[in-house]
Image 1 (spheres, rainbow, N blue to C red):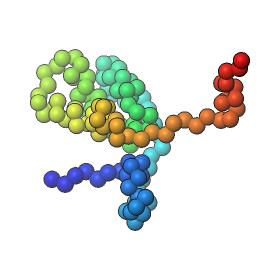
Image 2 (image 1 turned 120 degrees about the horizontal axis):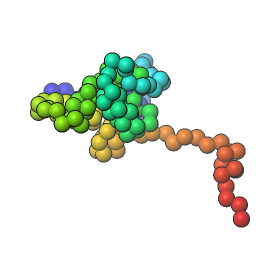
Image 3 (image 1 turned 135 degrees about the vertical axis):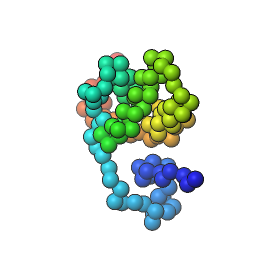
Length: 130
């Protein structure tokens, strides 16, 4: 079975294009809108899990285009939290989706997130004076 294609942003963060500039995919679509709130069709428990998982995720990972797969993960996690009977396939799917959203330590190490930029004014104001 073939390996999943690595997104351009991840390849770029790893430095893959430094030596192989011709492998860059300039036409890859990008999304800049955050994932937002849980759909209203979800139950109260599922909305709680949505907030918990969204808060645990790395900044910039969950985007608007990820809503469907994130909703699947949330429903599986809600079932897990309520001690509902889960089949082995459901547990495996939850683990796989968690890794796709970098919600475990090994996959989180593969994500590169830019630190927020601070202005010179905020740096000056936050300095401690003697």
